[in-house]
Image 1 (spheres, rainbow, N blue to C red):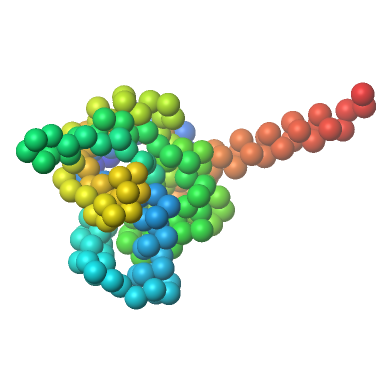
Image 2 (image 1 turned 180 degrees about the vertical axis):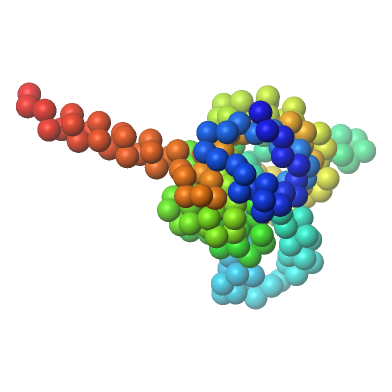
Length: 208
């Protein structure tokens, strides 16, 4: 099993191929629907003006995401008496909801990896080839297990979006994932979709 330290180089990302299991080490950032929509509207498409601390958060995210990974995750988080946050559950959420945004976010911030479940579509696959980047599939239904890989919560941005939707900055060690979309145009999700479609067509074609 390969170990990848974040931030990762283009060379490291291009060495990965569909089907490879990987352990991730380093700093990554969570981000879901509200986070991606905010990034796109405020800083990529610029259809809304920055407000409040938007510019400050943007500069921090540019630094944190450069060469790193976005994790589609709505964590369950606790906070102790000293104010320290801890992830209790950190399972992946369905990635396809970010399909309209992901390739643009990857390119703008030089994001080298996206973690989630269920895979993504053609636009993101093209983004993986261009950035370059990869899509990592995390284990669904193993939120507590994955949380054990989160060694420290380093910070949080845009908590006003709500705990699941905020940008959580986390340090991980031996975070288990599998490459299911690579920078060479390979997509295990497309293979599964096509084979499932063929099975359905064969079933529909049978006389009953």
